[in-house]
Image 1 (cartoon, rainbow, N blue to C red):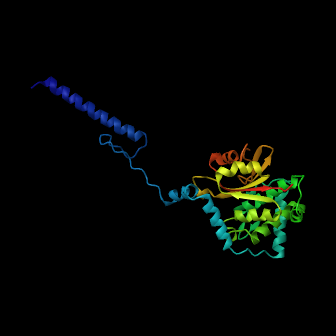
Image 2: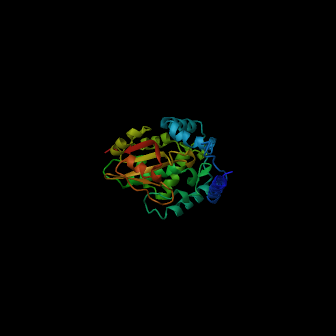
Image 3: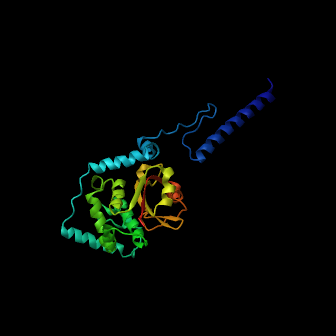
Amino acid sequence: MNTDAVNKENVNKKAVNKNAVNYDSANKDTGYKDSVNIDSGNALPRKKPGLKEYLRGFIPQRVSNGAVVGFLRFTKGISKPFTRRNKDEALTQLSRIENHLKSCRQSFIENQNDYTDVGYGAKTMQYSGCGVFAVYNALVYLNKKTGYKKTDELKKILSFPPAQRLSYLIKAFEKNGIVFSGNLGTSPKSIRDFFAKLGLSTVMTSRVSDFDRMGEESDTLILMMYNDRENIFNNVHTINISKDGARFTAHNVYANGRISPPGRTVGETIKNIGNGKAKGICLIGISVKE
């Protein structure tokens, strides 16, 4: 027998076994519990997305904006007006609003999250009052704007002190505009109708391609949007977009006082919200009649 050949073969077997041990050790060191059979070419199975993961993007990505607006219009139609609180509760609410508005000084409301103690329907203004805040902020702009004829109803609302004005708006939309007692916020059509009744020119679209043109033609705007185009569970939000020359600024975007960077168009302004994840649903253009 060729002892040299046998010894060489034993050495080779040891080398192979040593390599196998080293490979297993490497897998263990990296924290992988399950090794991969690289000879068979099989990879670890991917986890299939569950129902929640599927629903996250279904509405923002597959349901048309028009269908969403139509749904809110329909549900508002079958919702009952919210019964106003008694006189003592109304006075308490007004006092709370006055306390919150001390920091605004006749300007835009940017801190919706602070309004946990102010009611809107069966919910609170913090929970579902974004549409009402958007109307309030649009009125701030209209109050500052000069050189146009105001109707008596608009003059009346603009003459109210800020707290009384917000209280008036809450009551008005609880009567006509609130959806399911505030569980689904405020119908955008009711917001458009509110401004039309004040004698202002209004236009509303759910076509994103029309947003920039409407922005150029309107004096102030109200936008309903998805906070996250990939996740409906991050909620829908309604905001006011004001104009200062060629600059558009969104208000109450994050509801915590933080301001979103302005844009040169409505589309650019939306892109600046939520690290580019926001997506418009519908836009209401409001213009004065000079």
